[in-house]
Image (tube, rainbow, N blue to C red; front, side, top):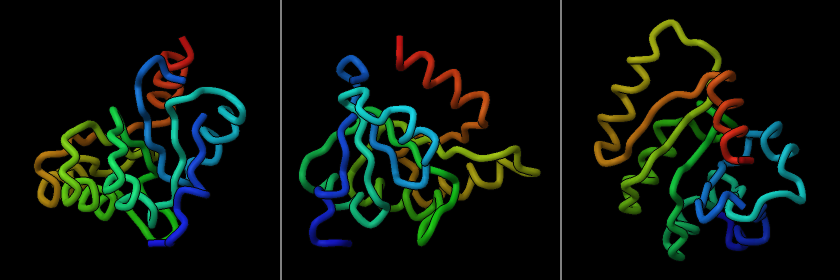
Length: 130
């Protein structure tokens, strides 16, 4: 974990929701530059530190995989921090999405996990904007 992870966390408002987005979601980050409060972007290495500091997200978003992390490692971090909320990983269609869901459920049984396809992500972002 980087010692100064808060300097790389941006807050961008989802009407009381706190959405924690693991960096790698460039399109989402660009669409909210200067936008909503309640959305925080962090590097995967800063996730555990933010949770330890008391950030309590309503929902966590990340790519299925990125530099130095994948959905399993993010889920393990969330589980270890006592997170009991929703975690979505964005991905293209997969040949066996249930395999990914089973593996995440195995390492993080208390985390509510699902995969988001691009069209699902678009709907989620439209609903967040109101």
